[in-house]
Amino acid sequence: MRKIVNKADQKADDVHLRDAIIHRLYVRLKAERQTRDAIAEAAKRGVDPVVIEAMATDPVPVDDELEQSETVNILLRRFRNLGAALPAQAVNNGN
Image (tube, rainbow, N blue to C red):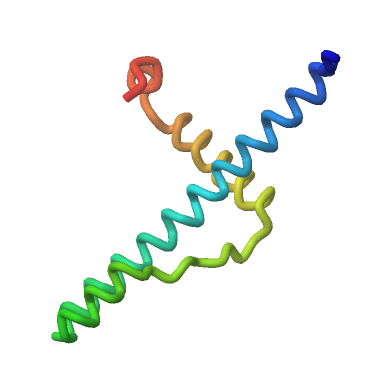
């Protein structure tokens, strides 16, 4: 039996999936950035290399302080504003 998919439902599913991907990537990037900063600070303070290696191999994930939809909306707004601030030629060329 073939299921008929309503285009509005499909679009909502696509937006939900897009938002989930954006959110997961943002949280992961934030965790990686914080881990990198912590490793750099530890190295600067002369922490034993074994500790630095442990930090690098077991990064602590960051919890997003906002809910997914709010985080995604903020990020999308920032990207739109960034795009508006770029010269039209750079936006059209994908640079």
